[in-house]
Amino acid sequence: MLAGLVKGVTGMGLPTVAVALLTLRMAPLEAAALLIVPSAITNVWQLAAGPALYPLWLRFRWLLLAVCAGTASAPLLGAAAWSGTVLGLALLGYGVLGLTGWCMQVAPSVERWSGPLAGAATGIMAGVTGVFVMPVAPYLQALDLEKDDLIQAMGMAFTVSTLALAAMLAARGEWHASAAGQSLLALMPAIAGMQLGQWLRGRMQPAVFRRCFFIALLALGAHQLLIK
Image (cartoon, rainbow, N blue to C red; front, side, top):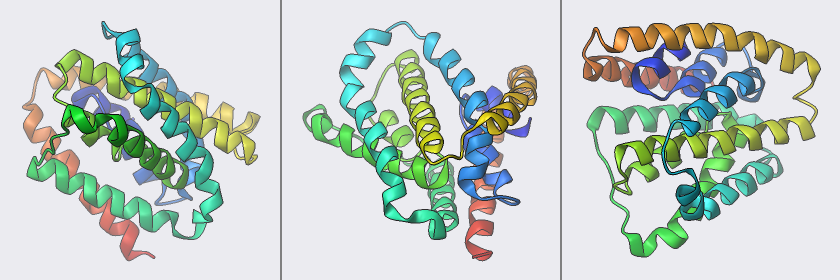
């Protein structure tokens, strides 16, 4: 519910917050398995709301295919032992980027090769930690897209990342009927949190909420690193 509230206010952060909190009690990929259904449905919702699905697919198809390849290759890295450390570093990095407001710029001339690199790195991160916001979200923000195109492009990237993660977990035997049922149950509080977040968005300053959100990510990331 808390993760859904964050997404309702900021438009992002459901799997990031939920995995960060659930890993206080379980392994990152176990937490990710619980979030497949809420992540998939909320991201498809975000994806379908935009105006330019096919043009964005043509532009980012190699990035999205690289996400799938990176996710599929993640188990080969033997990352289970250090998944918590990677998650902690990712949360710290995302929190610092958000608090400082730093935004890189990607020139159109390098997009052809930088997109697949960002996609592959995102897929590996998703396969190791269950979180797929880094580095694809900062990368898409660096392309100077129109607001609606940016939101839809993020929805597309997050949807593909969720489905690729679900396929990888299923192949490893970690996504089965029991996990699917628990994930479906997680959808209800996530949607309730989103509704509450959308209500709050019109009654508070988004900048204040985002600052609290990124400070919380810093704290959760530091906790992940300190318990290792």
